Amino acid sequence: MAGPSVELSPVIAASTHWLSRAYPAGTPDTIAHTLSELQARQAITVAAWLRYPTEMDAALVAIAGPGGSAVLDWRVGSEPDDEQAEEEGWRTWVDEVVVSWAACLLADPMLARRGVDAVAAAVPPGTVDDRPRPSPRRAGGLPSEFRRLLNPDPRDREAAVLLRHPDLLEPIAELHRDTLLYLLGVASGSPGIAPFGADVEGAEKDHGFA
Image (tube, rainbow, N blue to C red):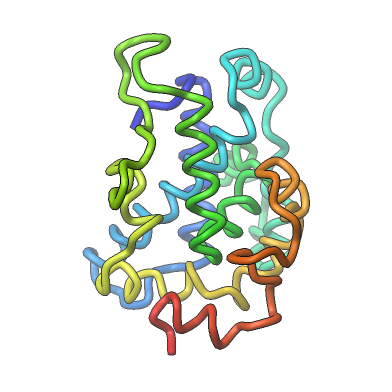
């Protein structure tokens, strides 16, 4: 899936990998893993496009680096034994804010729709080049690029039972939720954006957990 800049590819790939490892598929089979990872990638992609909306933003993060996964690792207790090991190098491309925003989108369907709509409005199709762009939703429809994020079917929900659970996501989502709400023009506690922990039972029913 092409975004506003190919410079974001390492950030999206590494951040998706981190989120998928931290919240693995509900069952160990390959299909479940793939479905869960697709949902993580779609949420990470929306979050990355929101955080780095211009070519210049993406170029700067490619030069300076996104910051790495150290705080996220500590939050979920997944620190590597040796963070300097060669096989752990991908962690330096993880963007803490992007992962936190993606966690917010995965936990809150209405917030996810606002995020996708914001991306669609900021990056209209065909304005820069021929790469695919997210398309605004038609009445009764959803952008196909983000279908699994916005409208997961029962198999998607079963595969992502950990990835979409508000309680489990809270340590990551709370890190930068306020910034995302401000960016999207959403007041904390407004209709459709439930405060985390305020109505966990309702949120679980929305996602098929209860």
